[in-house]
Amino acid sequence: MATGFIGSIVAFVVALLIGGLAIYISGRVIADTDDYSHAVITALIGAIAWALTAWIPLFGPIVALIVWITVINWRYPGGWLQAVLIGLVAWVSALAILFVLNGFLGLGIGAFGVPGV
Image 1 (cartoon, helix red, strand yellow):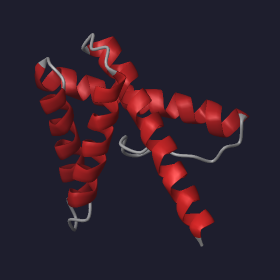
Image 2: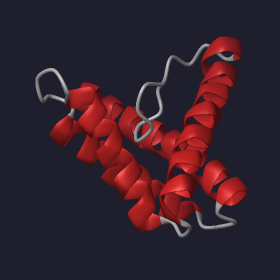
Image 3: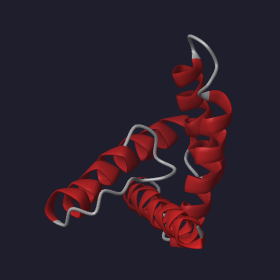
């Protein structure tokens, strides 16, 4: 029983670090912000915000995406356009990271904090 719990915690931490890496890459490219821990915290806050809003019937995913971009806008400089671009580059970065980790190494992990991957 403890092994399953520890495995779940490890999987969560790895997925959070991957989501943070994707946001870090996009923040570095778009906003010239070089702080990995800031990106990991952004991924955690964004994932919580997504979870709190995505369940809303009919418009949940749209509301959740707007809330996720709002979190990025709050955490990074540059305004709404840059927040959307950071989100887009984070999504593409997460896909690329997961393609390598899951496709070539067969790890079967996700990216916590980046919706849709």
